[in-house]
Each structure stands twice: as structure tokens, then as C-alpha cells.
Image 1 (cartoon, one colour):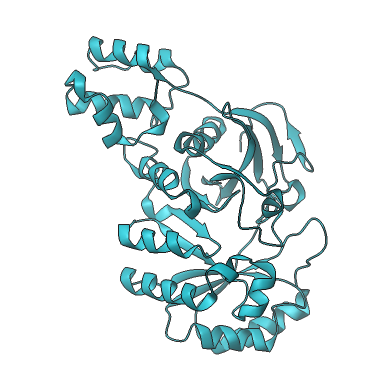
Image 2: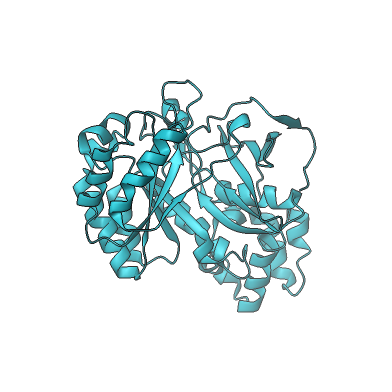
Amino acid sequence: MLNLKNLDLDELSAAVAHLSPRRTAVLKLFARVFSHGAKNMADVWSTPQVPAAMRDWVQANATLPRLAVVERRKADDGFVKYLFESPLGGRFEAVRIPLFDTKYVVCISAQVGCALACDFCMTGKLGFERNLETWEMLDQVLRIREEGERPVRGVVFMGMGEPLLNYANATRAARVMCHPAGLSISGRAITFSTAGWVPGIRRYRADKLPYRLAFSVTSAIPQKRAQVLPVEQTWPLATLVEEIRAYALERGERAMVAYVMIKGFNTGLEDALALKQVFEGVPLKLDLIDVTDPTGTYQPPDAEELAAFRGHLQVLKVPIARRYSGGKDIGAACGTLEASQRGGVVLDAPVAA
């Protein structure tokens, strides 16, 4: 059976080519599934301006699966974490992020679990179960969009899993997201976060994708980085930095480098000087993120340590921002997604703003 949510527009066109439909009819069908958010095959069958023969064939040969919403939890800061269950097996999470009281950004998962096993990340402690299919990523956004009073204007692949290890499915989802008849989200408002999976970065660069990449570094001292990011042992920092340099220069913009701050570990003068040395000549902007570790093994820097570190970082002479990681009380903050049910206010029904 043809899964209508698992195809971009060109793939859908190829799937129904034997029916010789007009391009506008295929576009109408695609828009019905994504832009209008069809909930079942009856919605699809009633798509206007689609020939009856095509509607009948789709009705007989296609499916429109949906994720089940197991639970919604709302944090004190307005973040909402969704726990999804797929008919293909496994549970995973997405987070609805309110911005400026006018729109949402949705943080979605690309895998059930994760193979990279970053030591401060709860998802990494789950191990890897499987890649999500394209439709499972898209349906996280669709289900959340159904319930919100504001439009979804951005998507970040920063939930469970390393999206560049699920490259084909994740980038197909992004193509649907940014298509005007899909989810109509600007390509510049779609971000893939990577812990440094170099083969995926190289493929991303070769494909010249319009979306943004965010690179997680966490330490510019390789020995330190290896302690918390095992990917360092496979793809060393020096190799990653050259990819970041090439990415920034090819795009003519500053690369977004994420730095997870850990108290007493990577916030000293030596850490700032290592960043300066390693990234010399690389156009970048540095996003500082407090570590969030429910186990208590890792703690964020206190105010004094943070102020000192920000002072040290002035040697970089690059834009520096402290990124807010919301939803801590419901396990929705960066690195805390583990398909768990804890904290916050449990919502039994769809939640508005």
C-alpha cells in the first residue's frame, strides 16, 4: 500500500504517473494530505479537482497512518511535550515551543533512541532502536499543528536521535515541510542539529540543502570532548571543524556552533583559548546551552562561573548567545527526551496557547 505521508511531491507524482493525471491534480492531492492535514482516507477521497479515477485508485491502494498521542505535558514556561506512539512500534517525543506569543516552533525526533550515546543526554542512554520513517517525522508536526491556536513557523530536528544518521528520511521530511503545498515552512526556519556525524555533514553540503545545520561541539579540547561525546573517537574534532569551515564559507554565513556548558568541566580559560585556536578563521556564532541532566551527574555552571567564562570567550571575537532550553520541569529540555512520563501538568485533551 502507498503511504501518502511518506512521499514528497515528485515521489507522489511518480507513484500515480500510470494514471496520467494533470500536475494540478497531484498538487491538490499533496496539499490535501499536508497543507490541509487530512486525518483519514475519507478526507483524501473528497479532495476537489481530482479525477474520479485517481481518487478511486488512491482510495483502494493508499494509506494515511497517524501517530497516537499517548500524553501531553505542559511546563511552567508554556512548552508542551508530546509523547507519541507509532503503529510501527516505539515511543518518541516532540516539543511545542511558543515564540513571541505569535507562533510555534516544533522540536521533533528523527529516531527512536540514539546510537551516539552522548554522556549527558538521556536519549543517548536509551541506545538505538530504529530510524523513524518520513511520515513519522511529519506527523509529529501535523498532530501538534492540529491542536495549536498559532501557526507552526519552524521545525528543529533536535529531539531524539541524530538526524544525519537518518539522512534520507529526514531530508525528505524537510522537503515536504518547506513546500508551499506541504507545511509551508521556510527552509531557513528548519534546522538539523548534529553531534558531529561527518559523513552526514558532507552529504548535506554536497546536496546544497537550504536548511540550517547546528553543530554540537561541547569542548574544543579533543580529550575532553571524547569523555562526553563518543563520536569524537570516530570523527575527531579537527575533521569536524574543517567541515564546519567549509559549510560556513560555502553558504556565506556564520555556522551555528552549540556549546553545552558543564560546571567545572568545560567553562575555564583553557576551554575558551582552545575554541579560539581550533576555530581560527571560521565564521561562526556560538550558542551557549546549560546542560540539563536529570541524574545530577552533570550540572550547569553557576552565575559566577558563567560570567567568568563569557569573559574568557571574548577572545573569540564572534557573536555569542545563551540559548534558552525550556521545559525542564517536564523533561523537554535539550538532552532530556527519553520517552518518559514525568513532571508538569498532564493534559488529557488538546491544548491551546
